[in-house]
Length: 112
Image (cartoon, rainbow, N blue to C red; front, side, top):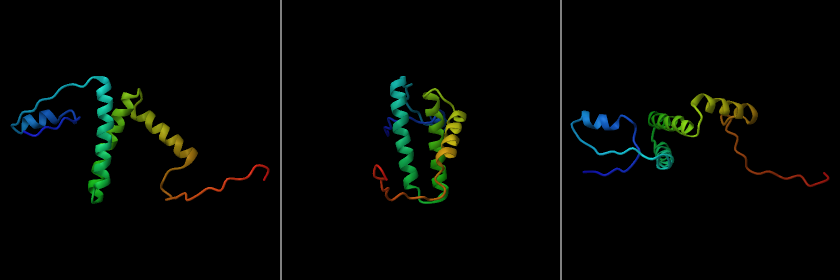
């Protein structure tokens, strides 16, 4: 029997049962839940980084987005507030669509 010991989506135990298998689960305490969400985010990010095609990449981005929504709630926010903050930062600092790659900055000398 495989051992996973990881956070899974809410319906995974039901999906396992529907397939005729059994599993054991437990509900995480708040601190462990937050830590496991961060671990899961790293896992999904790694899967995105290893995606070999656009379709797989978008699938992994959807998982990351689900985690972002959940993490926003854990931090007392929601997807709408998260989007508002993102939009504000984009308006003030821009996005990443123009492919700007900063190589170096020359600091001005005082008095110049």
